[in-house]
Image (cartoon, rainbow, N blue to C red; front, top):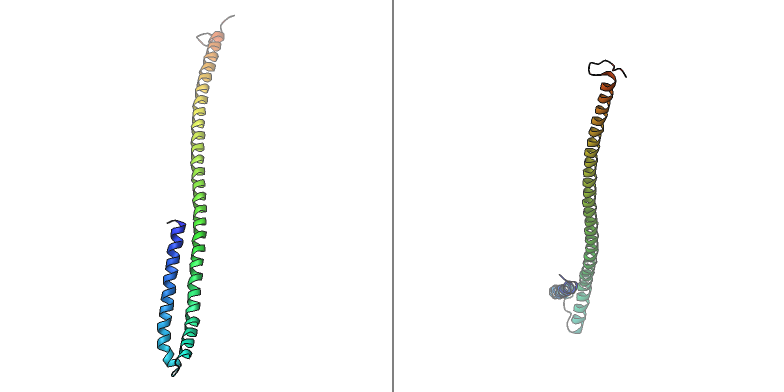
Length: 149
């Protein structure tokens, strides 16, 4: 719902509530007036009617208007908090995805380096072993005795 549409709906609702407050209060005043002020007629009855209507309906109408304004303010605050929460969650999600990709890349690089290091170690070990065997066989011969130079 757009902001203008929400305000229009709120204004119509407030106007309808004002009409209901005034109408309900007027009905109550018309029933109570003969009980509270018996024998009053004419302009005195009209002034008493207006006074009672104003004293009862006025605070109710002011309270409803205040609630509508407060509701709009709360809605704006909630939308702001919702937007901040969405932004924070979005940032957290991007951070977690980036962290997972970084950790995955680091783990893959570690495994790759371990494989390369193991292959190099195996190659150097085999080379060293063949060097040691060739030197040993050169100096000691095949029977384990030292060959004469």
